Length: 106
Image (tube, rainbow, N blue to C red; front, side, top):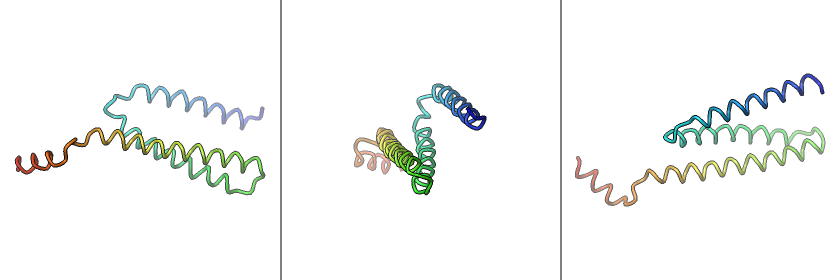
């Protein structure tokens, strides 16, 4: 194995371990902001995979880039759906009642 591949694998494993440890220690209150950050990171990987799929570096790179675009798109869309569902839990169940309560408090 070349040193560039070894260094890349080392960074991948180290980033995975650190990411797992950071995510495990996040309190439940911060899950929604963390999902928003994760969606932003997934969006960056989507842009990178689009660039890779569109580059003319051979058929293998194009196929791998297309797979990466598909996986990143699923990750971004799923992340936004989950974040939206989590944010709906904090909305009042009866908007008319909440608006009337706000007027009564004023």
